[in-house]
Amino acid sequence: MEPTLSHPLTDTTRGSPSERKVAVEVDGAQHLGDPEAYRRDRMKDILLQEQGYRVLRFLAEDVVQGLDRVLDTVLRVIARQKNTSDSLPM
Image 1 (tube, rainbow, N blue to C red):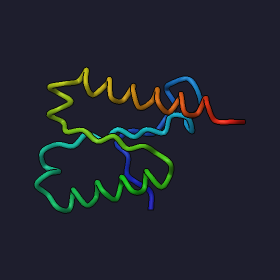
Image 2 (cartoon, rainbow, N blue to C red; image 1 turned 180 degrees about the horizontal axis):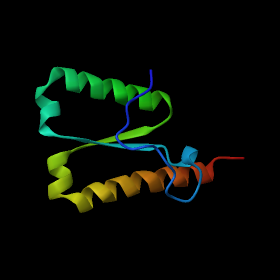
Image 3 (spheres, one colour; image 1 turned 30 degrees about the vertical axis):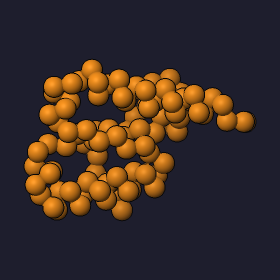
């Protein structure tokens, strides 16, 4: 089973997608009150993690009210992944 993605996973940074396997999910309030939506989201997380993705999940309210913090978090995770992949022996 493949996860349903809102946007295709593409490499928009330098390096191959295998170096930048980060999935960003934004949840609206409806996800918190709907057990089926919650289950679908957890299944999507599991499927992405099985494919080697690091899943970052944010509330839509946090994105709207603190976009800079959210972007800093995403960039920090990507940078950490780059540093880890750079230090791996070839």
